[in-house]
Image 1 (spheres, rainbow, N blue to C red):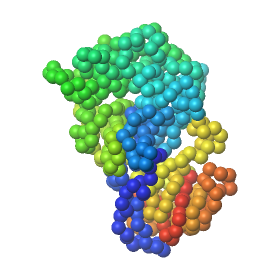
Image 2 (cartoon, one colour; image 1 turned 60 degrees about the vertical axis):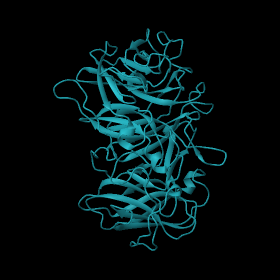
Image 3 (cartoon, rainbow, N blue to C red; image 1 turned 90 degrees about the vertical axis):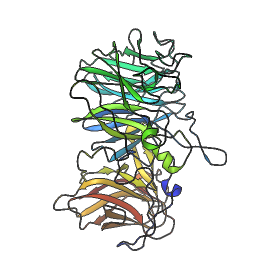
Image 4 (tube, rainbow, N blue to C red; image 1 turned 180 degrees about the horizontal axis):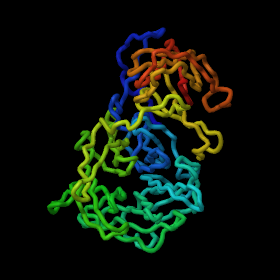
Length: 508
């Protein structure tokens, strides 16, 4: 997390509600209720890639973070300092859980040989009867690495101690940008990796820099020689999916300003090719998603992933909507989600209309379970932080908490189902490093019906120190919480210094 929206935005006017003191609510930025795009507003996340496992969608994203000059002013994204991958997940496509960041590259990362980690891809495979997960990443544009883990969120290790694909890999010597992997595990469990990009001088129409090659059975080796995918006006952003036994290779077209032959992809759009085989031959079919500038008024590169979740198909893509709302310089991207559909008469993909509305919530949210506080539909004035119980690179034994919640900050969940009988009690694990505070629970908006409030004394210390002693369970009775509502958790109380962190919560 790289900014506090409460400190970067003007606050809404003071409103009264049935609490002890009126609160100036922090203003939502980027993701505004009831819209569902971008997916999160408390951090950036670019180059999304989707993995579906056991009823959840996991999105792996390049961890864009604000860069500053010597005077503390935000600067244009240089991408040079990005060495982590952000992970979020959801089972309803609206409320997303922040799993924190995977420390991929650099001296403290899992892959110490790598310098950076961009544009990830993830895959699941059963090896020796066990679930194994693989994270493929771009070491800038000079090679592709791989990490492995026993779960979609880690802990991640480097199984080979070096890059998976380099300039020495057969068939990639002429690839300008050796990056942007995508992986397909086919119905027969054979796996393939797609990658590449860039424009050799004078070859904008036929760069021939996209590649495909088989992965080994271990998912951490490649087999044979990479094959060229003749994608017209190829730029970057390899994508792959399979529908009705047709293989779809998708990519972002380049920005060459020359005259294009009729039927060529316009600049900066997601184009696609089809084949009856995972390695081709390929036929160019057209484009499906215009550049983000067409929809949101702010352009940049286009990066996507197409996946099926339950009965529908979706496209995840990034756009600079959050950074635009924050009024910061260019280059900071956020992930969005929209439905896609296929033609009923042939194997074409229908054009996608990107928007702020996003996708529908596919199931109601169950509040009668232990919920990670870093699960949010909307938020304002918060950030997230990892509490590590062992190594900082070990995501699976870490907790991600919502932190730096001050007076007026809030998190919200969409379409929470309290049932006909309703909730009677609310419990949360909270740390408060400031003065005494109140966590107010409101229905449907920050100043909606107050159904309960937790009075929270100061805890002392810091969130990461002596976890068992600092984090306290607080409970309160709940009234008037029946049926389906959005739930807002708002920090109230006196006007003094506050700093609430929430680890988990549940209704009973």
